[in-house]
Length: 403
Image (tube, rainbow, N blue to C red; front, side):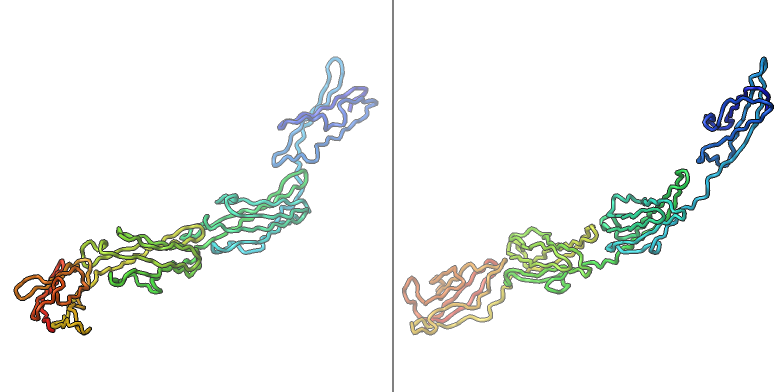
């Protein structure tokens, strides 16, 4: 109050920085007849002080001469934000989720705001990068209620096969309330990926789990059917490598397949492979490669093959009489049961001598046949002696020539 004076009203912030002039309805006014003037001081609606009050000094002064007079009123006030509901998140599945690597995940979540504010949805990986996985989050956002559909197509190559993997995802719901303040709600979902029980594939030889085989050079080409089986129907690949240097190459067509693969092993062992020995052991390494969840697991099996030289059987009998009279019966002397050639013993020649030790016949053919002549001349009847020469042994005997 004052009389016939021009007064000025000012507001000074004490513990905050703010231009207070816009908040006053007037700066100066003229008072007459001891009148009273008043002013409404208004902060903006969204000025919130928090826990500490704002302090304002209101100063009014007149224009008296020669000494203007002033008066100060200090005011403290607190302005709180209006009450606003925080969004709530509901996930329509149990947490944690436990799955195996070959399963996908899909579930729906719902975020509601009781004040009807617009709700935005988002998610973050807590212990992994979402961008490194095939994950989608389809959102249907609106005021009051928003929905999100989560889908994860697992990339098995990102997972461990022998340990539990746990992935934590935080879903966020945000709403803008009174004076553009943001309210945030979170919900964590844990996904536990268990290692899938994996049955190891196995190898069969001619449909049996027998990895030791015997053969001889008499048997000719070796032929075995080698197959890999996987009860989990994983992708498998089978191959074979020889651990020995082979004279004749081993043939095996590598095969890819799911659950079952197979191919024939072909090999023609030779005397060179035996290296002057009566028998030899040859090792073949079978590799069955399994591909599971992007991982490659190799399973190895040794195939052992014993190769024996041809058996040089002893001669059990030989003709002791022949009659080269051209009647078509017993006209030649030959030995049908001579030992067959093998890697160690080889037929060289046969010689026939008369009783005086003179050579009358010689042949380097194991299938020889002597007609009782020497250089086309018939020899006299009597006893003749034969000598069969191998590189490692000899066979001797006698035969009687009759007419």
